[in-house]
Length: 517
Image (cartoon, rainbow, N blue to C red; front, side, top):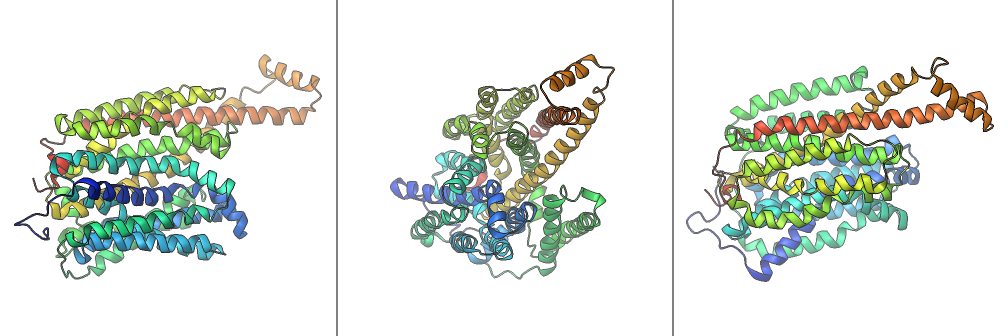
């Protein structure tokens, strides 16, 4: 098994300005990587128009990045042991910068998609290794703070991505959503290499598990592509989506069997033999499904149903980051005094309560009414991410932190992808159901319906146009009822996850055993 470079004499943690500089560099590089998953979302119409393709083809810019990143994340542990954690992180940041520039310079959709694929592949190990490097550089007693800072960059970035993306696209042009990565990435790479190149981890000349690698690439690739495009092709009524689903199922099933028996596995699935890793990753992935479902459907509903612009939808979504930002450092400082299971339980109760609160809104809800539960929800975010990261890392030796973090991040990303696919599909299908139910009431037998149509007629609208207005109103109310259903189901999932958390066993150790508990 791999080990730290100096088991006998572990490296001393960083202190003072060096630690502050490293934290800023790693946090900002992680922020930019996670930000790039969502920043493109609001710019898709602009990109599609600029490159002369349809908006549905424009979404390939999102799919290609997520696809490559999802494949690379579980490989993080193997790559880091092969080339060293510091070198892998710095190269990953530089590749991210180079391919970001190529994306900005793209003059055609194929060029942009290839650039996004390479950008996602290059940046895949960044998030997991950023946590590993922070934990190894912080003093043992302050590793809770490191975990809090890292968790907040991962959580806040997707929230601010659409706001920043919308502002840059509206005020400059879409390539700037890629160009802004250049100064941040270069500064992060230079600072990290300067501070850590003498603290490189021991490397091992491990053979490449080609069978596992092929199964991973094909299986995860097919699954991610299926999730990204399933809704547009009406899921399994499409032969392409059905083929992708079968391919993903077969490849990932064989991958699990192969990796459990491989001498040098490319993905270390033996980590799931640790109870706390399994419980932590399960809670993180399923919790992320519910949390991300809310974050995907809420701004969509605001823009498509209530007529909000991308900027205003972003402003309605953003207040969730305020309390999260304020609470995270306090929680990180006091994490060792708390039962982590109780902290996450509190988070899930708050998530469930605010999700239920959202499910009570109607289409006439004001901006302030919508913002308040988003603001309250913020307190649960650090209580969800920070303790669960510590739970899944607890008891693991330092040599396994990169593998564990990579695998957990992969499961979290997959949870987000599944959530996006399921929540949007569910919202649309429930919208159609509610529309059909409401339409049943538009008959001469219902006085309210006939009275409303008569009022429209008196206002000078012909019968056909009057029915068109009614249909628009029904669609608005149906999609609002549908979004209420999604929020209600998310609340239910949060409550159902609470018993799972208590399967984890204490003690959880400082920074999840990153220092070799």
